[in-house]
Image (cartoon, rainbow, N blue to C red; front, side, top):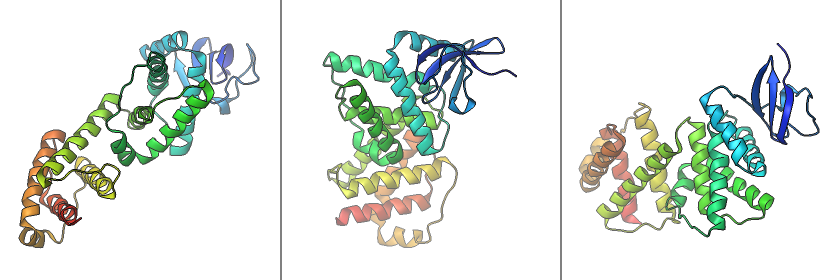
Length: 274
């Protein structure tokens, strides 16, 4: 097996190379730094390999040819940062979706087209690690390109990172967040109270739903030793919990156990006492 030989340097973070007569695109932080055409690329610099023959990598080639190389380089730095911090390998699709998103977001910014992100607070609660990395990513883009992304872009980039972690389409992450938001809206309606999204009660409610859903979706139910007492003492909250559970079942196509409904009832009781 031969080494990767540089055919063309796209920027410090992406190069076109050949190995055993196969042309590939290599990405990695500073992969092209201080190297020239026909140089051998050290293996430790290589983060991702794209074989140009595949359809996905034809898309990536198109991205390379159509997007500013500075945006591509920044995107690769962001991806590298996320993989280092999260200790996971992100799905390769993010090498296409992230620079494409950043490029389009910059175009919108220049044309003064504003797109609000209504789920910003929810995303910060649901995906705290991804949100923190997305915040750093936006700062990096702003500083390198001399622009000013709105805070909403933190949420959008957070969704891209989360989708890449779970090998999902970004739309799946958006759909999940929307469903959580719908559930919170129902809780607000049933309790006849509005939530302040900056309040601790809102954070606790979203967090509770997140972990309950993770247990339910993964088929890891938990027992509620207080279930019978909850049914008797907090019958009104339990009845409300059933309505919320039915909504969750409809949205997520799952079955919510009585044990989980009991925990929802306890959470509702606490909300009513605040």
